[in-house]
Length: 313
Image (cartoon, rainbow, N blue to C red):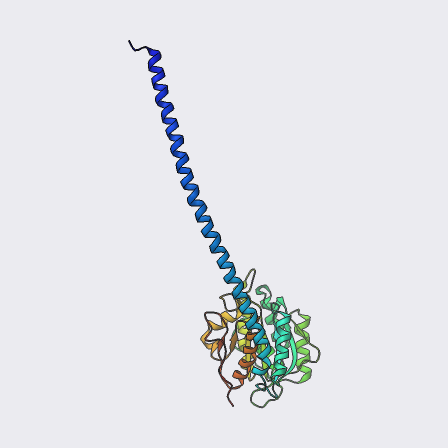
């Protein structure tokens, strides 16, 4: 007769066998799984190494290209701005190194920089837009008419353009020296600009900016600089707006200009000022402005090409 003890031992044996089977099966599965994971990790590590090598090679090529552009830049622009004058207008985001390198290239091109006007952070601050407009209206010299637009960038450009650029019609200053000095002093006292000592009006202007605007009201900041540069262009023989990587985005001044067909028809833009090639292109774009043309240059998707064509003779 089968006893209760026999049943208990049989049931225990069955469960023990199941447990042993599960352990043995899971061990085999774990080994297979671990083997697959290890192989996948090795493949991913090899891909990472390959991508890193590609990145290093690309960086080396960029350095070589920048060195080449730095070397041949003076030759590429030689004489294109002969006997021409240029005023530099820099925003708070512009890099001093870009400005200094561009100043040297302008000299290599035969041009003369007549001074620099720095726009402060307050200039493009949306919270100070009304104050800027009030000061502009109060400082307006006799004979200068402001544009009908109501945005601060256009209005400020309507004042500053005639102060820093000579007339494209007769190559003469558009205001007296006393009026220009008083107006720039008023803008300086208001905290909106800083002018270099002895700044003189020029034939051409370059507005230098950084990358994309940042912080609260970034879009408004970019729009203010874009519309300012466009209005300055209307005041003289030509203007180029040049910025670093990111400036051609929707919250960059270059990008705002390129989204406006009316602005791009008169104002040339460059989106890679941080590179030696971009600075060469900026000088070539100034020459293009003298020839009555405009273009969008650089590396961004909304650029029409890397550089203008050969200058007209």
